[in-house]
Length: 99
Image (cartoon, rainbow, N blue to C red; front, top):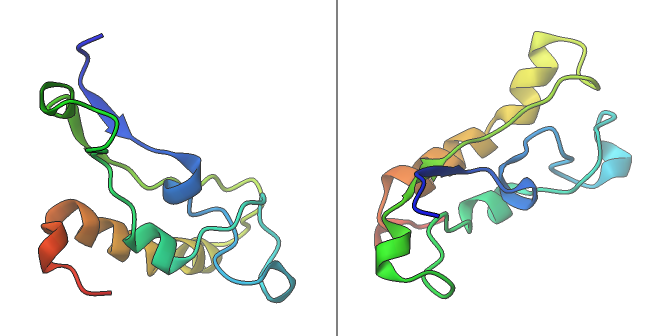
């Protein structure tokens, strides 16, 4: 429709999901989003959008909902290092990244 967008797909950008095996993690809302998965994310899909459509993607955003998170220490645990991986995805060219 020609609107600028920020990409926030649940499968890559929700850091309130488990980041390791759920049995070893604090209770989370669900989902399973590893550091590697976040690092592999490509916010501008070249296989399904034309170059003209790709121009409307301004970036991406990491999300942390806290209904299962009860302390600032746990928020930090859930967000990092995945937020750092997302920052590198957004700020670096794909060919310059090295997980």
